[in-house]
Each structure stands twice: as C-alpha cells, then as structure tokens.
Length: 318
Ligand SMILES: [Zn+2]
Image 1 (cartoon, helix red, strand yellow):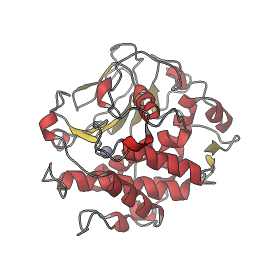
Image 2 (cartoon, protein in one colour; image 1 turned 90 degrees about the vertical axis):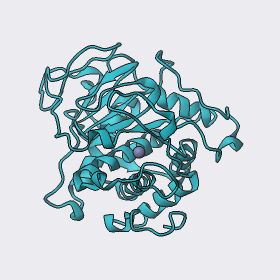
Image 3 (cartoon, rainbow, N blue to C red; image 1 turned 90 degrees about the horizontal axis):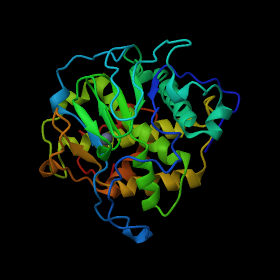
Image 4 (cartoon, rainbow, N blue to C red; image 1 turned 180 degrees about the vertical axis):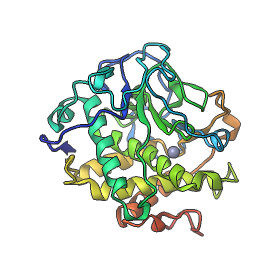
C-alpha cells in the first residue's frame, strides 16, 4: 500500500502519539498476550479479543468535544489536547506530516493519510448526504487514556471507538501484537483495515445504528451484527480508496494480509463498562470467516444498504 506523494495531509483530526516515536518501534506499554504464536495455522482459532468497543454505556450521551484543554490531561506518556483547526498549535507527533510522501515514510503520517482518505470517502458517500460529519479525532495513546465520555481505557484493550466523543482511540502496541501473530508482517494495510473498521463504527454512530443494539452476546446477536457491519463498511472504503488522491494503490497482497489480520482478531470486541473495566463474561463471539465474508461483501458495493447485517438471515453468507 502506497500513498500519493503529492497528497496534502490534514492533521486537524489526529492527536496524541507523543509517547512513542512512531508505530514501528519496540515500544513500551502493556503487551497484549495472544495465544497461537507465529504459526500461521493458529489463525482460525478464536483468539483473544483485541479490539474493544463501547456501546450501551455511551448511548444517550451527547457528543463531547475534545477541544483544546477540554480533556487534556497527561496520562502515562501521551500528549493530549485537541488539534482541531489548530494551525501552528499543539500537533504532537503529527505536526511533521505534510504530504503523502511523509505517509510513505512514517507510520504516524500514514495514519493521517488513512484518516483523510476515509473522511473523504464517507463525506462523498451519497447514502450519507446531509448526515456526515467526520469523527472528532483519531487519538493515539499509550498506557492509558481518558476518553470524553466512555471512561478510561488501558493499552490492553486495543483500538476502540467512543461514541460519546466520536473519537477513535488507537494504541500502537496493538499492531505489534498483530504483526507478531502474523509472523512479522508489518503492512500499512493492516493498520488501514483496523482504522477503517473503527471508522465504520463512527458511521454507525452517525446513522443511529448503535442505538438499535439490543442483544449483546451470541452468534446472532446485535453486537456481532454491529461488528460485521463495521467490517463491511471497511470493505466499502477499501474498494474505493485506490486513487482517491491519498491512496495510490492497494494491492491484492495488501488485502490478503489485511484479511489475515482480521482472522487474528476474529472475535474482536470486548464489551466494556463506562469505567473502562473489561468484563470477560460479556465477550461476543463472531467468527473470522464471517468477518472476512462481510469485508468482502463491502468491497463489492458502494451502498450502505448492502451492509445491513441486521437484516441478514445468514451471517455466514452475506
Ligand atoms: Zn468493532
């Protein structure tokens, strides 16, 4: 996966990242234990849930702005504080991200380019006409983070979307764990897939889909349907991203590796309480195959109606 070197990056919705010099480093912070090791055959087994998502406790809470000073505390090593429209203001590690060329050379900047591409895609999506607004922020943190309405979270929970502040929270050590699981592969598209999935949750938030979630557990539960729909939305972006001005190319190999990553997070979401405490008894169990099937389904369509997992009778066959 490569970015258009001439693309101009907008860092106004990317924040944090001060605690670590980019995604590729060894990094401190909590490692997420993943069973299975490097053997490719470990894929397919249900693996520790890494991506973490807050639903019920945040519904009904109005969006809160993570503006300058808004919730800018220093927890762990992260640098907090909004960057929205902050020309010359606090820019964390993203301030050096000017062009697609930077994105090709720096994982933090790649995150900016990906965010810009996704925002551009959904902003022009006809089904969302009049309803779209970008997420408040993609916030990179290490160790621990205080959200604007979804409690606090630690590194061990992995990436998640908080509906209350419309912010995607990413802990880079999550990717280290995935790449370890995949046997050392380190591709930008894996990050793209994860971000696109979380962006999918933002779209669901805008559309009110999250409020429809009633059942939290079980293979046909609303919670699983919500996850599979986010994968489908990720597929929609993937198919449209190439040559969108930010993304120069996405190869079949990229997609294969992204799907491998999807397998490693087969059952990916942890229901959490507002406190950020993880309750293992409320794990949901979607299958890897289903995630891939819905991601691929998304790649075949540009209509969000085709990603309606809530109406699907057979989640195995979108
Ligand atoms: Zn999710």
